[in-house]
Length: 390
Image (tube, rainbow, N blue to C red; front, side):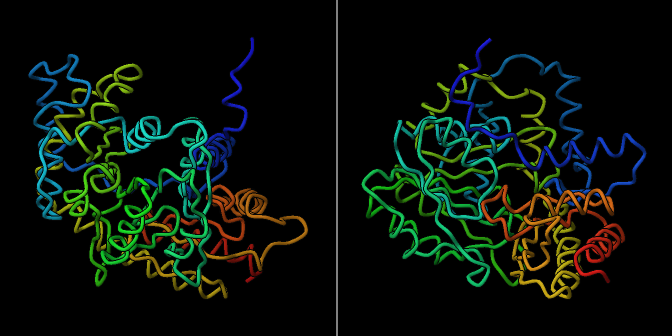
């Protein structure tokens, strides 16, 4: 049996690999704390679960249109009108199996072999692999902790060539939690339009933004220039629906049709019951998000104080639920890089983390603070002992 050449350069998801190792150690009887997987520790809201149960009771269990049921597509459109003032309609929305499939479909629809895709680094782990599967070329645009890991026009311009066709933006960021302001997003969008570069704006964490920072989106810019931008969203993080697998895109109607063509030959529609649950989620109430945000701000501040107390450089994030400190000063001969250090921490004190190398920055390690306060403090105390000996 011969496996296709296109998979030769594709690596398994680092976050899922770390989680698998943690599960293996748990099976051996070890007590493991995971700060690795990006999954809120809150339950799915009751009104969302009730909508799913009602859908089952009503027999809503058959195939649906590939891009999603009309009421869910309209709910997505109304979401961007409600929160960002963008006038749109259901024809501009497509529903997919989580934000991950939305991104994959977009890249497959937009990228031709040899096209260059700009990816600010650090980046979410799956962007490079998706670009490679679409036969595109990844061009990484470096950022630094001193600049809050935010890309600049100068950095983008230095990376741009005649082959550049797409830019992937992610705000709030996974893995850094850092966010672009509305003005910064619009400045980047103007630069991209000027240079004929399409923007994929990954805004999956857009509801998890913490005051005084205000949520920012390219939705309104999309309304003015719909052929130049696609926006990716999901309910996985904001409504604790990671396992439900529901993501969506706001895009030009022609791009939605192209993505539907891809999806129609791969997965077809997403789970019918999940779609009804997603309608309930997008329709509100939204109090669960406000409650989560209060907890995440408290946990962020707890974790930030402990991590910076080690002497580590770390931007204080304004969104998501991650910290991405620079920790290479603690690397040793037996743990000379982020992957080795994460392995050492997992084996010595039972805390699972994700190496920064998976996100394009080997100097760093990603910490998720989507766990309760007591567990978070316990985990960070153990990590601190490995790093500093205290």
